[in-house]
Image 1 (cartoon, one colour):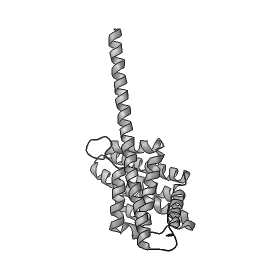
Image 2 (image 1 turned 90 degrees about the horizontal axis):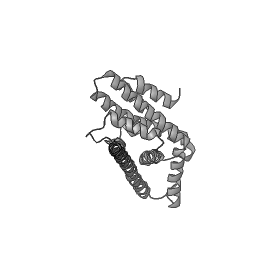
Image 3 (image 1 turned 180 degrees about the vertical axis):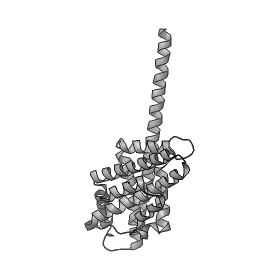
Image 4 (image 1 turned 135 degrees about the vertical axis):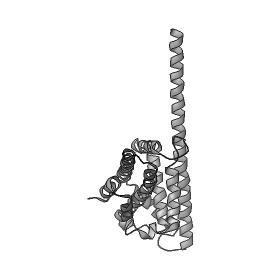
Length: 227
């Protein structure tokens, strides 16, 4: 069974207490409060209140899944880049171990999504709704994994990090503080771009809805005039 299949299986059928098995071998990340704090910032951006009812709920989850399913490549790319740049603060990118980096990325994004899923499940007493949440989160992870793999995003972003550091002479040597500050700046910029991507997407959806509503209104007025 592949890593992603094991994660999806855990999400759909596992007990909440079983989710901690996902972080075995990655304690250097998930026992680090600084890492978790920054990861939660990224997740808060991703899990924004899309339907504006004051909280992230099942309806927002459905909209998020539809955004990913419709091929919002900019969202997927910026999310992946944000997480990869966050990872560089705690683990050096190794060009010869991209499969390891891909697995680490998948574990990070899955852990984050499962954490949010656990909160949503605890808010629902209806078993069918809890199962629906599990199914949606599983689909989101499958979609992200598929697109990241298809677009070779981990490779492309790792190459970007390597080129950025090499161009400044910081890849193999140099001031560690300077290296950290350079990547941290890239991380902050990408995080803001992720936020802007979601804002632009939401505004586009709202504009399209207003156009649709106006079209329906004008159509009804036209029918009234004909009658």
